[in-house]
Image (spheres, helix red, strand yellow):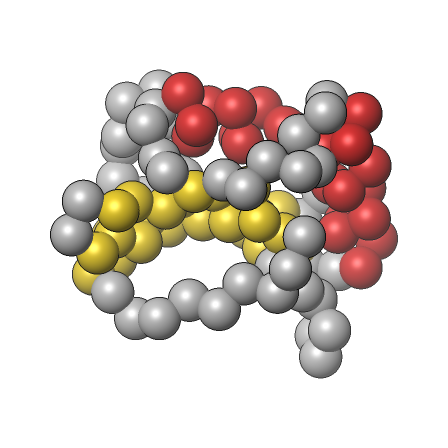
Amino acid sequence: MGIVSIACFASQQDRKDGNGRPDLIVSKGDFRAAVEIETGKSDPMANVKKNLKAGFQMVIIMPTSQAVHDSILRSLQAESLAGDPRIRIASVKGL
């Protein structure tokens, strides 16, 4: 998992899309990424799976703390999704 850098493409907040509602949709041409801001109060694995099922090429998870980051990473590992190149966890360094 690496640090994710997001360029400013066209974005839409809270657009109903397929099987769920990502916090943010980032797109450029045919590429679409779902961005989920995770506070630890939702089910991040359900959000990841929902967004992949909805056809997003990438799911970017933005944890709000190191503890949430670590919990999501453990969950991804438990679900055998930690190495999936479509799933990125943003760094929380500097928060």
